Amino acid sequence: MGDTLHTLENPVRKEERSLPLYDSPPVIETVLGFQFLPIDRFSLLHLGLFWSSVKQDYPKFQIKPPLNPIVEQFEYLKVPAQVLELDLVKEPEVRCWLIDQRENHLVQIQKDRFHFNWKKVTGDEIYPKYDTCRPRFRREWERFSQFLVDEKLGSAQVTQCEVTYVNHLEMGLGWNSYSELHKVFTGLASMSDRKLLREPEHLSLNYVYVIPGKKGRLHIDVRPGIRREGGTQIIQLQMTARGKPASNQLDDLLGWLDLGHEWIVNGFTDFTTQYMHTIWGRKL
Amino acid sequence: MPDVQYVDSPEVQNSEILWRIVPPNYIQIVSDSGTSTIRISEGAFVTREMSVFRASRITKDDALRRFPPGSIVAAFPASLARDLPPAGAGCILVLDPADSSHVLVCDKDNPHKRLKGSQANTFRRGATLV
Amino acid sequence: MSSVAYAHEAQSVEVFTAPRLTHFHREVISQLFKKQNMDQNWDGYGSSPPSRELIDRAVNLTIMLNFDETTQGQALALEGGGVQIECSKGNRELHFSLFPEGTVEYLKLEQGHTVDEGPVYSTSQVRDLELWFD
Image (tube, rainbow over all chains, first blue to last red; front, top):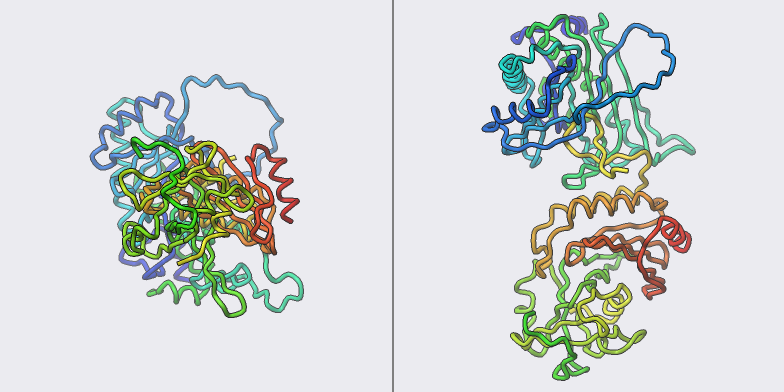
């Protein structure tokens, strides 16, 4: 595991990568993104302007409520006194989804966030791999950054980098009930020997791991759900790596995404069983 | 249907058999002690101006032609539609002026109103699957 | 309460999650979501598939029902764009029909015979129906 630890703590050059590889991983969506200090003068009009500049690639859009900031803190803060604040909102805050024609790719923009999503739509798509998503994310981020400069809005000061992988473990593929999830996740024991607590009605699992050097955290969330598209009953395994980049330089920002990606892929492999790895066609 | 008078058509006699085509959505296969039974939901009859065919005026193949594969025929006598509750559904039978094999089963008091669950259940219980 | 909650903030794939879903809820909700992808004229009578909004209402009604794994549940589409939730246990059935115009109706069956029916207009009425059913 020594080489792996080295890999996890430092960005790895492409030719040295030895991350686990799967033929058919259960990943259904990936999100690469940055949070940044709010761009004060960034308004609804700028969202529309930006969209018009990328409309050829992203002809569809949706308006969503904004996401709250989430910052990985490592200093223990004193709990502040409760203060009631009243903010006068000048204009509604929104998040804009810019969606490509096939709806596999999505750019999410709000005044303090930029995300790029890939997702399965038909179910037949093959996950394009991080090495394909990363340059596309870079292209979109650079396009957005240039837009900010052109509109004299300055540059985004990134505070957090974030990588999320959403995996859908479908009932019937390796497991058939919640009492069988020891077949899926390492660290769970079989319930068959129990006298009383054998078939749970519901479960949820949450784990948080610190990325060494306080570079961030890996969050693992497991919960049952029903995918709206197709009504499939699933266990959703969601892994999010989030942390502060070394600087606002693009290389450091993308380097943090690489680190987050490695933690997610290695973490996914650690967290799930060899039995499931076989089902997913592990190659490396 | 355009130009239709929503009144009961005496040409459709009480003894006549009517067919309601039931798409697969409403069909359940129920297994019990090794035997399987086809059961249909009363939802198959929950509609306004329920469209049915006169068995004497159309073949089963022709009746099923425009419906999804796996659809089945639920057959019931016209009297089941006309008789008042609890024996029947308390409906009128409106003949389609453009197609003598086609009939609309409509609520007697308000022909354009959706049939109630109890009326639909009457049809479900009284129908034979053909 | 929104009936379809994203499990993660930046996620776009829609996944319904709730703190407590029994086998009954999961089965019915799964079948409701499947109805969204039905074809136009799925029944041969020209019916549209149920709308997203109607399915959300049906999901909201489903999660209100305190039924466990002893209750069988299924969901089916109705002619004209409605949906029906059918609950069965022993010799009793309780059906809820939701229609595009916003109305909801119930039907009580015992050994297949109609016991009662009517519009659904309040949460407390749903609780009374549950009491009869259970």
